[in-house]
Length: 111
Image (cartoon, rainbow, N blue to C red; front, side, top):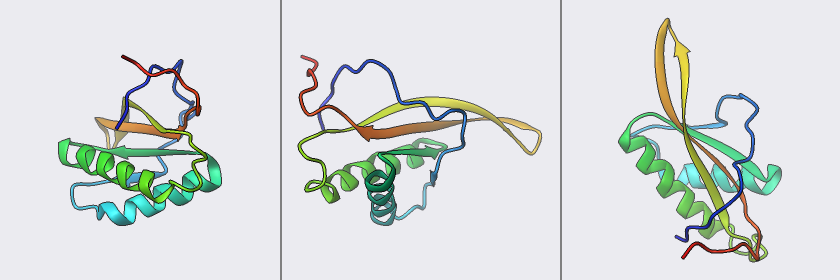
């Protein structure tokens, strides 16, 4: 996995994540869904709560990248990670949100 400096994350415009990852999520199936959404929309948001869900989301993203090797046209898959506060059943909660999209094929690498 490479790290690059990028200007700003793509906006989710306040929408809930399209994919929710949990501690028991099958990462291979999640990777397939991530790949399909990236191919069709160019952007996918992934949400999860807790360290195991976050780990599973990262694993699914790495697997999705391998599924997309041919369609990537040399562009890297990039993810912007943030935390998001929301209210559910009268409780304040926080979840991890990853906005994933294609980077530039000639993007500058961080050294």
